[in-house]
Length: 280
Image (cartoon, rainbow, N blue to C red; front, side):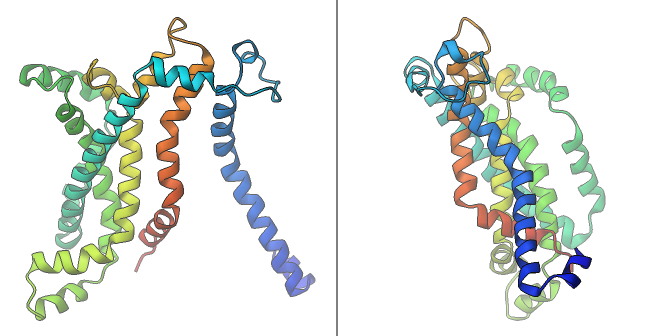
């Protein structure tokens, strides 16, 4: 690129650089969009064409979507996922911000490492002890039980992402607020929280996605009354539960909410992740 910059005119080089950047972005993002498109397009296939992956041109049908919506519990399960993921994200983010502030301002590196260790432990190793405790206290097949279990995901994730944002906020801004008469708590809410808004948005989105996609905890700790969206897709793994087209339709319906959430607030997400990656 340096050699081309010297050989080509300035406008030609800028145009070539822009085209190259776009091609690299398409090469990186294209496979993810192709997977979603393939899943959606396959859900519109008739059953007799499903095992012919080379067939791309056919008359789309929406019967798979109507069958999934009317004959399964996917809509109540999506509502369950919204409730559980929203509460788990809110509680996890609230605890994560407070913990991240404490770690960042008081240099509690051992606490940060301990939280990181809990994030590294596979969830499946915790399921049996959690199930035993839930069985004794009556939290199986309840919203409260699943929300508490998802905090194992959202709190450590929120702490480690928010630490970077809070560390980038100069302490002098808090000290100026103290001089003006604010307490540490008032300075936290009037200085730290507003300046951390991009990071809070980015962290909330990521926590929500991780909570939404969690499958193991919902399968083991949930039940017939409190199933989540991923469980609805899993039920179609049984050949007697429905066709492959219905499974693709269910997977599309489960993916759409998160897809549009990220699509609508992608600017805030990108800004939050970028600011968090800048060091002082």
